[in-house]
Length: 353
Image (cartoon, rainbow, N blue to C red; front, side, top):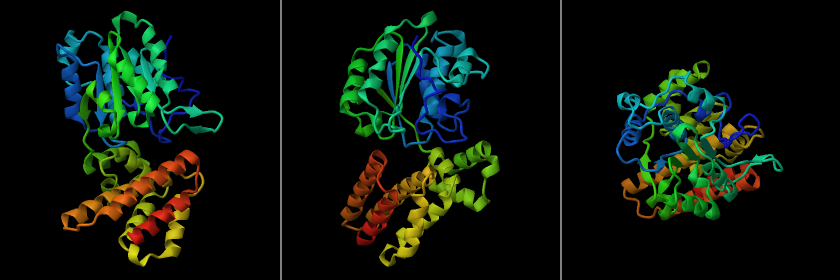
């Protein structure tokens, strides 16, 4: 019998400690219009077999994917009375499908993610072709009671060339009563052939109010002063995941420090920058490293947009720094390189730019 994964023994990539993973969440924050579009499509005469759910990381794509999967498995008859009367994709928490997914898996759901490498004790840096090939045995079984078989690719941005081509092949020849939910942080970078075989729905970044209210609900004991909460909600740039990361560890200190030093890069306080880099690269503080990535990218994006709006003609140095920083972060994660050096190089390159 096919299972999504044995979540009891396999670590889950990108899960935030102390917070429920997407398959356990009963509530979707924001995205009412996108949820309604999926519901309308499900009960329409023609339902596309593959969907790209696009938008920045941490805004709720996986939560929506599991919410849709839960609804489809609970209501396999698209033209039944319950589906016709539904106002959203919610399913009661005590429904057997909801309980199965929350417990860690459902035989008709395949959740493809970057796998855990037992040898290196780390998650692999990409979503390999062997994971995509699991669809062969998954779709080779017969779904019970005319149910759906649903594959969630989380996220397609992690595919390499071989795994992307393997996914394309099965999208071209989809089995009966199957649904593909392909999550992507940057859908425009996916293979055009994959995009052409999917219907695309983009999720908008969450509002600051949505993020503030969600933090009060999810982490009521960790809420800082109202001014700090407002700063975290704004710095999150529409991503609840980023807000939770900033709320954890030293996220707010890193956000304030990075902005301060970046805005004064011409007169860089090297001692203070070294101290900030030590904080970001501290062993066992993955939240700090993720906070740096988020804030650095947001700051660069806003600076480039501000420079272009003010008539600055040569934005190339910042564009080059954007590419260099993203590559340095990826290399540090994939090859276990010195994170402190990545932080220092970012500020030194910014001073030059």
